[in-house]
Amino acid sequence: MNWPDLSDYIGKDFSAFPNSCEAANMRLQALVPHLPQDLVSAWAEIGIRTDTDLLFSGSAVDILSRLPEGSIRLAQLRDYIALVAQQSSSPAIRGDELLEQELAPSQISTFCLTAGVPEIDSLLETSERSLVYEISGDRGSGKSILALHLVLQQLVSNDVSALWMDTTGDFSVDRARHQLQYYSGEKSSSALARLEVATALNTDAAIEILESMRPRYSASPNSRLCCVVIDTITRLLGPNLSAASPQGHAIMASFMHHLRTLAREHELTFLVINDTASSFPKGNTPSTSGLAPRK
Image (tube, rainbow, N blue to C red; front, side):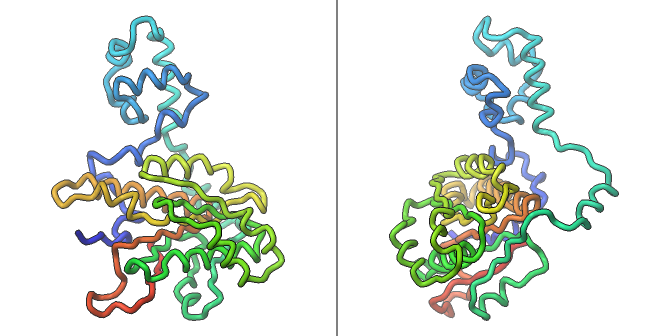
């Protein structure tokens, strides 16, 4: 099966997918402790796990009838439903205020992704401070090494942090330590301490990790997270893709839209490794990776 071009899904309006996945919705578990854990667990037992499930599963009376008797009063249930509706709604903002925010100087230190190699840096040059980059190529072509190089290049020079989301269990601390010895910079002694590794085996886990890191996106230097590597996205999205069903493509659209939104809101850089799509025509593929910004 050919892997679709991710650029088709970044920034795309995916409202056309009526059955888009939970990744597009807010998981109710993320609202604990604002919501009681026992209530969230009770909702999960009747198939209500996201804000969409709760807000479009019928009236409060209908939901109450499906919950264990005596678990909650109707007035309380309505209050919690109202809280979920408030938390899942986007705050209103006037156009002139939004324009003023866009034109105002950024208060966040800019993360400039560079490789130190002119040919690669020419691909990375852009007026945008936040992008989702796709690193694509055949297996074994050096995509992960390239991503590690880009991350270490910044960690040894800047007082920032990075997140490596490992979806295969193949990340090697020893390899990162070995690679680091070839870099020099005033921050090199603490570089690996600022490279965080998290394991995600599906899109739900990946979304939860990204959401849990939100306080770090705008934190002070040293603790501010400015770059996220997903190695590989194939393991996250591949099992959901099917030529017979649009559901997998809806999941991909939702997930890539989520990454793009985070990148824009928090001036993050995402490096998404795709090991099932080559950036060169079949039969003319050199043993190098393709790297390009996806807008």
